[in-house]
Image (cartoon, rainbow, N blue to C red):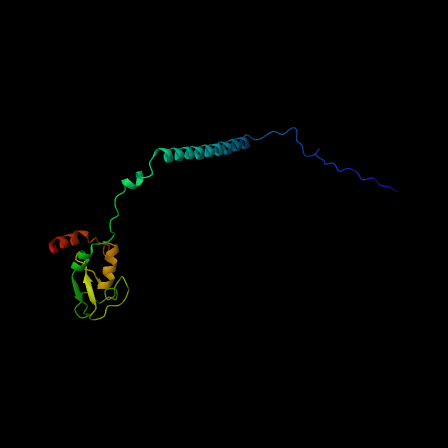
Length: 162
């Protein structure tokens, strides 16, 4: 018995739909909206690319750096910080020291002990360890507790000390 090998052929007759139609108008609308969105996205990416090329070619590279302002130091001037009044902590004479919040530095969260050197902020009368508030005021211009600005009161103190 001899069998001859048969050639393999793909069966495609059941996969072809010659009468394909979109039967729902909603499906047609969805396809149109998706296609329009796709083409709009391509158009805007192309438009952005054109604008970037134009700006790179026609604007000098130093345009932005010449219009910016020189950086200002973020905190108070050291002479103003040194001019702030200081005192020594005494638990028996501090007004309103009945609460535990008044008896601790809100910067380092350490409890004040008798003899600690404190700096008093003139506008709000809050007090902090001298080292803590000095470090704070080198970076910020406001009270760390109530955020009251020290620029108005400290600028007057700076002009009288000069």
